[in-house]
Amino acid sequence: MSIQRFTAANAVDDITDAVRSDGAAIVERAIDVDTVRRVLEEMAPHLDTVAPGTDDFTGRNTRRAGSLIARSRAAHTLATHPTVLGVCDDILGANSSSYQLHLTQVIDIGPGESAQFLHRDQWAWDQFPFPVGFDVEISTIWAMQDFTEANGATRVIPGSNMWAPERGFDANETVAAEMPAGSVLIYSGSVVHGGGANQTESRRVAVNIDYSLGWLRQEENQYLSCPPDVAAALPIELARLVGYSRASYALGYFGDTQDPIEALGATAGRGFAEPMSSP
Image 1 (cartoon, helix red, strand yellow):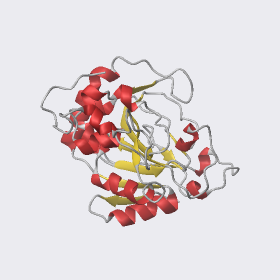
Image 2 (cartoon, rainbow, N blue to C red):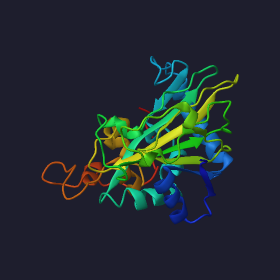
Image 3 (cartoon, rainbow, N blue to C red):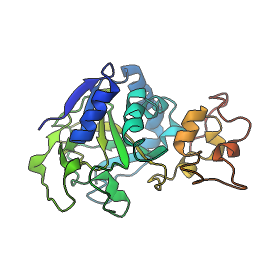
Image 4 (cartoon, rainbow, N blue to C red):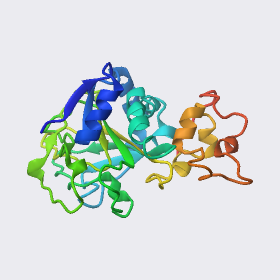
């Protein structure tokens, strides 16, 4: 079974249907090469300072740098891409009144890195057995260069989002999400996947941005990654997406039942009038 492919010109409903049925879809060339270049340039100083992972899951020759909303203005285009948010609106919106950023990171897989073990992203919540078909997370992998099977393109088992939790799986069932730079793999937190093995002499770089239901804890602590003094400079809808908002009726309020957006002060939503800090 292959991964269905689209462009940003396709109807969001068609892309949503593919993610619902297969657990994943590719939207080719969803951003332009200039946006790719700017994200890489803005994140390079941060990526250069992080050490590789210390286990087989994070990758012993793989570097990961987070806090993209605070560190990269260009990454905001990815986090708020209308096609991605349209899929989130349809899938996550069916299960909650709100959703939020779950994590943001650059993933840089080095030459010779072995394949990541296969997993479901929603295992982050202590492997809680969410009902099959009840999606709590939408994930994205943005290709910052051409993704090939040889350089470690993300591997996915299409349709595994509808498997019972006890159903086993192995690497022979995966397909590589090969796609040109600027493309995005949109997939559910319930689909089985993993980073591929990098068999080339070059690094494979991607941006990983995930979204989750508003009543679940975020994997990346957004309030440390993007603290109020930084969030105050964001467009207001992005600040709310980061998590400066209430979920459901009252989840996430502060003080005297105030909306978290009020904590950002009168400058909330002003845009980038002042330079960003770099946590």
